Amino acid sequence: MTITSAPPAALERGLVADGVQLIGGEWVPSVTGRTLDVINPANRERLASVPQSSAADVDAAVQAAERAFPAWRDLAATVRAGLLFRWADLIEQHAADLDQLESQEVGRPHWGPSAMPGQVRFIAGQADKVQGVSLPTYSPDTLGFTLREPYGVVGAIIPWNAPGPMFVTEVGAAIAAGNTIVMKPAEDAPLTPLALARLALEAGIPAGVVNVVTGYGSEAGAALPAHPGIRRMGFTGSPFTGSLVMRACAENLIPLHLELGGKSPQVVFPDADLDAAVPAMVAGITLNTGQICAAGSRVVVLRSVHDELVERLAAQMQKVTVGPWHEKVAMGPLINEKQHTRVLDYIAIGREAGATVVTGGGVPSGGGFGDGFFVEPTLFDGVAPDMRIAQEEIFGPVLSVIAVDDEQEAVEVGNGTDYGLVASVWTSDVGTAIRMSRALKAGQVGVNNALGARVIGGPFGGYKSSGFGRTMGADSVLEWTQVKTVSLRPATPAI
Ligand code: NDP
Image (tube, rainbow, N blue to C red; front, side, top):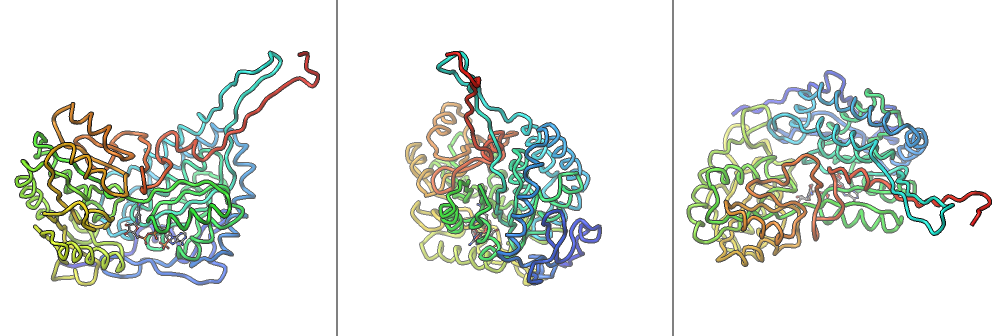
């Protein structure tokens, strides 16, 4: 296998430029001039560098966003919507370059048609539908109603696993509601967000409405929710960092939403169509090398179908081809060395706990594999519900099979982690499907499908430690607004 890295076409075509970030419509280096390298995780080659920002850069971005806010807020909502639609068109026009850029920095093979234009159009369509309500009053000479108003300057922090979709989801909803935003992307995958911000500017979204500050989470990231000019935050990432961000928001007395990952169960009943279920379940844990918050990482299977399911899952996993983004493979490398070590450590933890590796369990050998952060798709059987591999988010292509005796135990095991992001149920019985959809404690339940709701505008978010607040749906725009009650009376009331 040869692993070569062509420079991102987006860089050659000027969609991203080395060493600069977007503040107030200007492409600027960090205040200190420091930079950090973004690497291709398939071979550790440098793709580009971005500013290594600090609190001073965050402050400059917040000030730029404050200057842009009044005009953006006061623009007719239909005009704001139109600019977002134009942004979606540009994202569509540049889909191939964006796809390549995201593939190179994240390390994933081509994902198929981009969902980003559709997501931005859906959100754009909500911009002019933000409405208040009329209120009953105590006297006929009074009018009462509510206004939904933007917060002002808001902030968002996103992770590296799907930088493009997460950027448009957070930025789209926040600016559709009339806020201006400062975004801190992950240090490992900031290039796609920078390219998307460039297209927002090109679409005519005014300077300062969208600002992107790159750098380390502990420096630029920590400075964002701590900044007194930020009025609301959105965060996607690990529970540990989510809790730090929430603490900073508490100090500042500002609200936030959190999306913190999952340990999503795939509950398989004996009447499931395994021909359909098995490929979807394997795709659900190997897509993006398992680095998806919604990944269905626990199989909870009724004992009578356990043996057949394990055999089929193993056969399907062995068909998953592994390699760099530009080869026709199903699965790429993990994002970085830390993640590589973490996934391999969890595989060792599973073995030590007594679970059986049915397939995988190591790193692919030969060729250029050694230069990248590759790991084999791994299937564990004989997993007990309380083992760490069944409780903790691994964020890698590691699937754990837990056998149960009946539906009640399936519900208990399915709900038996701190997380509650997504759950899947595989059955051909509509009664089972309805009972399980109600019983599973998760923000999204998919019946006979994996990876969460396959619907347009489905709100996305978690129960329990998976977080709170919902992104992606129509209500996500409302989450970035606050409600004002207005009561209106004549200067000299008659009553
Ligand atoms: P983090 O939660 O640390 O990173 C997510 C984002 O937060 C990144 O932009 C990061 O910046 C930023 N960040 C880091 N530290 C701070 C801070 N002190 N204040 C503000 N922002 C900060 O996740 P990791 O990348 O370390 O991944 C670890 C694990 O988290 C994964 O293995 C997985 O289990 C989980 N995870 C879940 C995700 C989800 O979709 N829910 C996404 C990513 C990870 P920087 O990248 O520069 O550190």
